[in-house]
Length: 249
Length: 82
Image (cartoon, rainbow over all chains, first blue to last red; front, side, top):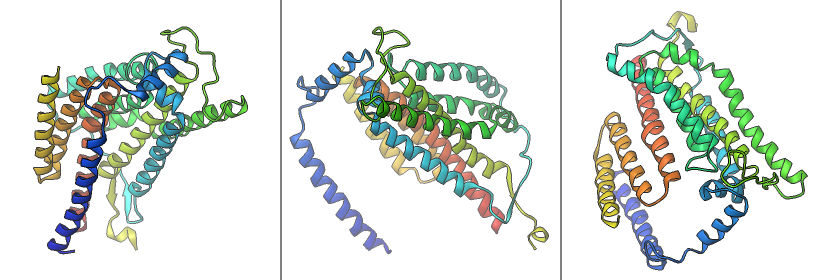
């Protein structure tokens, strides 16, 4: 496609988007207005199920099916990306090089922040129904926190912290737990992923019914999935080399 | 509050433009990370801390890391195949 054709395609797309965008903006309620029908509906539903954090109540209870779909998409993308990143027939695995050269300050910061980040991540997962956060955010914090071992300059250390098999099992277990939770709702006669457990006392750690269970399952799945995904990139970059010519024949 | 929100919207607009105008993907990963942080602060000001957390974790940490690793893999691949 030459430059003119590309510009024409862009102008068509941008023009259509601009028209739709302006049309949508004209019909929107004013910024910061007082009337929010969805807020009122979800607030009541969340409070009835004893979940102070309404956003998590929507994600893991009121619209649990949407979250289930999103996590399935994440699982499929991780599987697809790792399939693409596996060593080809003309490549072989090798031992990755040891530690690179790093500023001592960077190394220290990496090692000090590693446990802190892991604790924060676990906290965000477990308290999803009480404070901002939940399985998805906490899972990503856990997975990125682990990679501080690499920021500290040691890929072999990251590899030891990250027995990849276990993260693959973790990803499957997390997703499987969500499916099991959904089927439990069906068996109880309340519907797929319905909140079937007692909701407990408002604001306590074990409350809001299935919301914390769903959140922890998603946390395991997301943390493992992101680790497996990044591991695919790291291994391809550091631990895979072209097979020497004589080997191929 | 509204003034703060307006300032952040302005900063986000500037940040987005800088990301779009950065040519080299390696540098773009860094500007994208800063842009993600600005967007996170804006979400926080608009009373959406859950979205802000996701934005900072994904937009400022995971995506730039993936971009950098992908750029490195592609470069190494090109150097090898030459």
